[in-house]
Image (tube, rainbow, N blue to C red):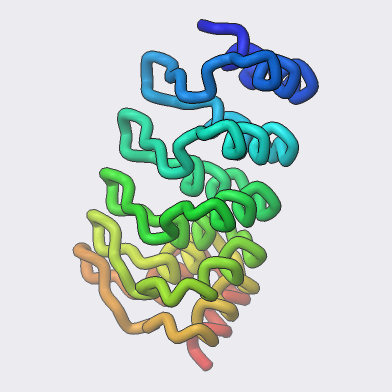
Length: 186
């Protein structure tokens, strides 16, 4: 592994910034296709994320699983680096090979700040993943009442059924997520 990827993997932002400024290749990848931008943004490294983008890092680079830095920042609940990626033109509609968008990840994690950022982009709210689960299904199943409220207010359809015929309410019931159940029954 090269020095920049190693510094980022060790969560050493200062060294990463120094290496980027000294001309380290910002487009390199590890064997799984992960770039320095994937690592810096998912770890919430604001300075390194900005610098990588300023030096020409590909904002929508995909790893071998079709995962972009934006997916990872949503999955890791990093709204600040998420906003930076969007400001540099990251595609909020990118779909991973399992059918997840950044909104699916934000719903799964219950990360309301990321959900709110995504809502500004007129994205498809009711897009199902490969199993037919929408972001609302994920938020309901994972017991994230605030995320469920925001998604419903934005227009998510609580009656969409997954491939297995489950609605977000069914999933909340299966997990005994009473607060979410009450929200979905209103």
